[in-house]
Amino acid sequence: VLVAFVPLSCEVQSGSSPDISGEIIKLPNDCKDDLIKEMLDQCNGNSSQPRLLAVDDCTFTCGDWHNNGQTMGTHHQIIYRKPGTPCGYNKVCENGKCVQKCNLDFKKNA
Image 1 (tube, rainbow, N blue to C red):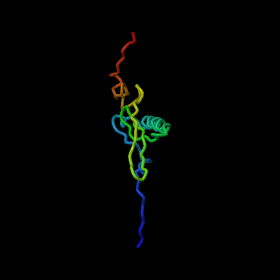
Image 2 (cartoon, helix red, strand yellow):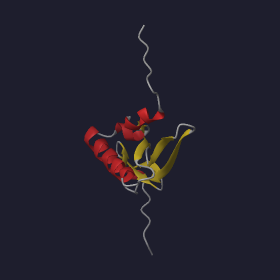
Image 3 (cartoon, rainbow, N blue to C red):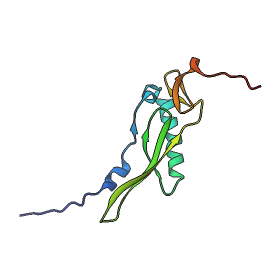
Image 4 (cartoon, rainbow, N blue to C red):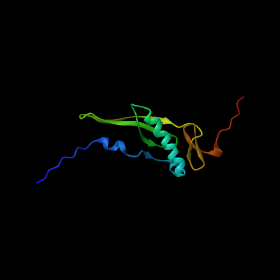
């Protein structure tokens, strides 16, 4: 009889891809890949929240999992993407929302 024990942990998730949802899925692959790389770089620069966990139209979430043997959990930070950043086909981020380029507010500064 052969018995094997395999340790299981939330840390397995750390190498997984981020959850990507919303209009950003409709971007051409090269554009989408460039944006995701920028988000990955920003998350990697934060030692307390080094992983890109989720991407939505105009936000992304950096965070990390922890497991000290007694408790497991996550901590995260939601970051808004810069205005004008592509977020979908012919759409950009504006005030935290993904809007058609033709629907931008072009107020003149007085």
